[in-house]
Length: 289
Image 1 (spheres, rainbow, N blue to C red):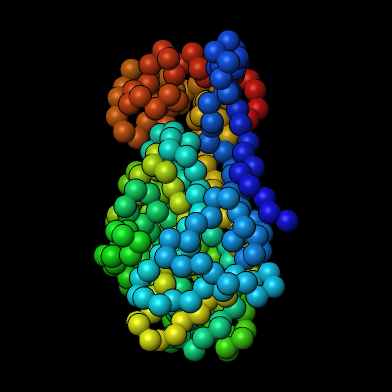
Image 2: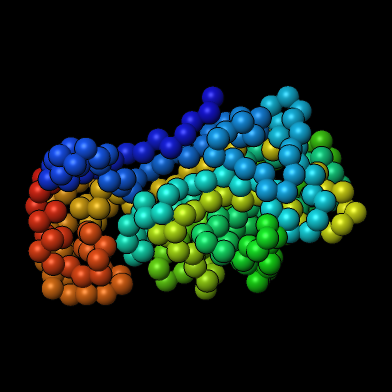
């Protein structure tokens, strides 16, 4: 079964009233979002999926993609709309969980989170005997231009042709940098990278080829799940413990009348902590998110 954009929301009474009077929907809040969960065939049929360079084939529920050119974007899926996560100081975690089938001798697909032209993620590779690389780069004309691709582990184990594996690539975005977790086989490694992504931009998932012309890489995707986690379902929950209480108020008062890029109590994300933020917090004080 396919699941799309299951979002937990938390709005103040004032915001709800203003939206109702204006005849508009309430503002989209950060939260836990299950963007997609389904088979490869369901991913192909999903309205938010696109195939910029080729159309896949299907083998039952499996999506099959050939890799005719190195670093070519094969598939994309929207993850969010701009601004859904609010302030850049609050981390965004994008989790990509996949069940893959090795359909060729050479097998090195890349899975990325894209924001604007920038992209960060990981590669699941067959050589040497199950390896992973953290990938950073930019996207231009549906081609990944790699900035860095260091190995983070090798020898994790890898299936023979026709075998399958479960892989997880998790990208955590903060204003100070990005970390990439890659897990499959016997390995599970998290690596910090200096570059970061714009969390307020339109985010998307990319599947990218990593093969030289003529190597004949073929990727089978049996199932995948794409999800995003933000610290809390409502911005007023400053400490992210799923309620608005004195701990949140104390944090706000400690930052009151200050400005900067990394203020936890900048609820309206305008670069400072002031009465507007205090009023929003007090409007939902002593409530759960």
